[in-house]
Image 1 (cartoon, one colour):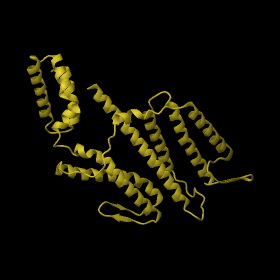
Image 2 (spheres, helix red, strand yellow):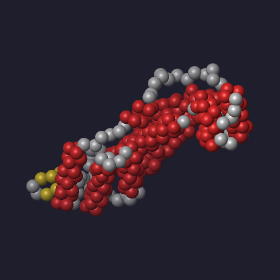
Image 3 (cartoon, rainbow, N blue to C red):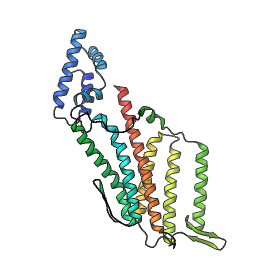
Length: 316
């Protein structure tokens, strides 16, 4: 078999997934290409096959024609997956915060059940919300797909140019910004070395009163310095390499630091205030940062995936 034809069929094979008819489909495509080369050019040569393959179509588009009736989620509905999940997650997240604040359980038929839990348990519950909501929307779209293509789901059309998006997030670091970041970090480090904390309840000429207990002050201050240090190091590395990979690794490392903070609770760490639950505020703040970092991580992952797909299409 022609080397070019073999590569072309292999690329189509990737998009056919685990279809039972995969071998038959590839055999049929191969037969069509060779017949077309013979009919149009009189002989099946490497150069003739190259010309036929060039006009035959993009491997992904060719595969989609054969898999049209076997999609788990129809191409028409794939754009709705993340959009509907985002809407459902926003509702789910808001109700969970409400249940957490008032320490109640909620049953929202037919979608989900929110248990009664403490602040620490909620930090592990929020990632499960994303998984659950994505799965629920995926199941609904699966049954819609099996029903047929005559169903139209409501959602405004968004003409997103993924090629432009993938190429557009090329952040150019600036020396001035890096210098300001280093100065700010040096100031924070100086404050920590002098007062052994970065979290102040009060600061006066007599001394300082930390928001945390002495042990917790040192621990959380070092965690914050590490967290910010990773951000500055990532910004520095952007001067020398592709920023999207740096963003991905930076988000991952900072999520690990948050995980360490969550999994090493210190008893009686926060000094109590009579007018609000400081522990709840701290937990919700950490949860918010974790969600933002997770979103940034997924965004970088999607852009890198799209960029790789665009390059693959350009090669074919």
